[in-house]
Length: 217
Image 1 (cartoon, rainbow, N blue to C red):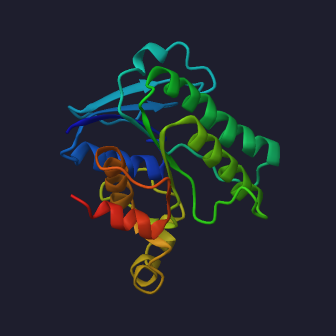
Image 2 (tube, rainbow, N blue to C red; image 1 turned 135 degrees about the horizontal axis):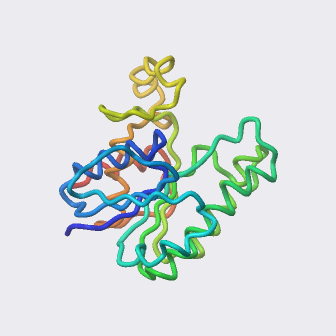
């Protein structure tokens, strides 16, 4: 089974890693990326839409039908942001895109990159906002999967890793060995996302769940 997927956030670290793995994955036949700025990549499987405003997708909505899944990797850090601004760029933006895709593709599988320790009743604002987003998506889609990765190792060939990543990359092998519940790779995230579509999975996926799901062939 070859699936057609939409990926958001492909100019960021997580989205780019997921994109690269999807382009190499034998079960992925077509990938559409929606970006605010050009990706700068070409591939036979890849189609790109550059669109500046994710709160108004009316101009491109005719191009968003007929897909099996959305791997939603778009997100911003809450550091330095006001609470209302963070909620607007996280919950409001995600749900604007999700509601349109749910209308155009009723059977769509929606994979949302949330974060470890996400909790709608948590003490941290980012955790509450992400938790509210998760809950809304789980109610909107028949098949929705919330990915809660921790520290993620990049995919070879990435151009858009977090600027601080090189300073912390050395931690990965140590963390993976001693704290496996907090460390995974973007390769595992991408493979797990594909498997949610082709094989199914539970709604909430913590790091250990992601790693286990990625191993299924």
